[in-house]
Image 1 (cartoon, helix red, strand yellow):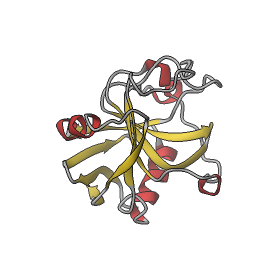
Image 2 (spheres, helix red, strand yellow):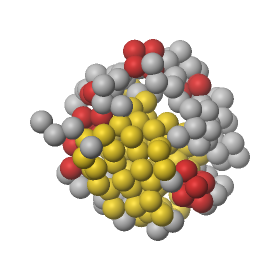
Image 3 (tube, helix red, strand yellow):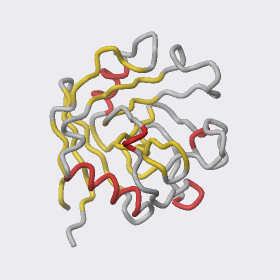
Length: 175
């Protein structure tokens, strides 16, 4: 079995490299790897940028994230995978953390988000999701935060971008 420990995303603004935590979050990493291998992310976009100015008022506390992949529809929900909480993995939603987007625990879709600041409300027991289970953190940015800052600066008045930013490449890097 080939073990992938890094993923490289290319955007018009530059390259972002992620380190996967496959030992701490094996189900989340495997789901993400399958999406990368299928080419799903290479055909995706940065489609959502949430900041303190455009976050929905009912969502509390405010967060700062860049979301990429594909905007979800009900058909996109994956069969249930294990929801690896931050309580189980020991990972936390800090600046540069990558996490799976979800509807409910384990009901994920082809999208991830990257924290642009520490977001403890996204951890297990946090108040950002009503069920308190938090989101499944599984990777971190190891290079390209300056690229993400450039992307984050393109936030619009609403969190879903009218003009998504294309992902021009998404590749697995073997260690």
